[in-house]
Length: 204
Image 1 (cartoon, rainbow, N blue to C red):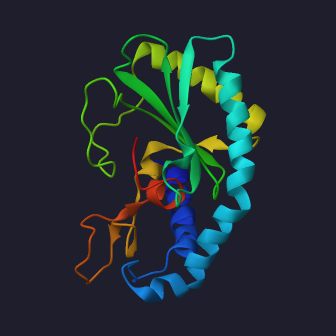
Image 2 (image 1 turned 45 degrees about the vertical axis):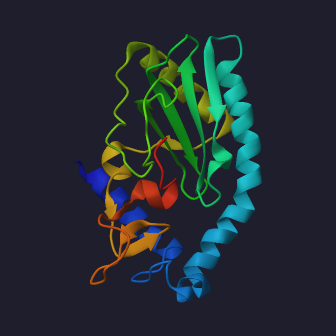
């Protein structure tokens, strides 16, 4: 990890604590009265519709006149701090697909490879990230280049979040079964990450 990535981790961790209250699980009623939870919901209400419109245009721009197919999955989970989609080359079975997330809260996006859930793989825990990886399949490398060229057209100023930053832990916060509260027995056994805080607590 380089110094720029460490600086970014520190900045985003501090920002995460504005959206997630320290030391309180969302299994407690007090969680929903905190200023952090109110700010989290306000951000969703303010940017959700705006980003969804731009994201739809982006996906249309990526797939137009190509064999790339996509599935917009932004609406699968209300509390996500992002828009998201699955993308793949049009063929009978896409074993490795791309998943794209664009955050409402920070000027970054995440792009990785995952397994195709509809190609015989059974995934029951979407909090598990062991089946995601860096982009390595040749055809996905080409699709990723197209995605990265199109993103600045529809979302100026955003950058791809480095993997080391994406997976950095954010401890002592917990939301919807993800994360852990220090000194407490709770639903989470591992800390939330930057990805969980600013994108989603699920990996598709």
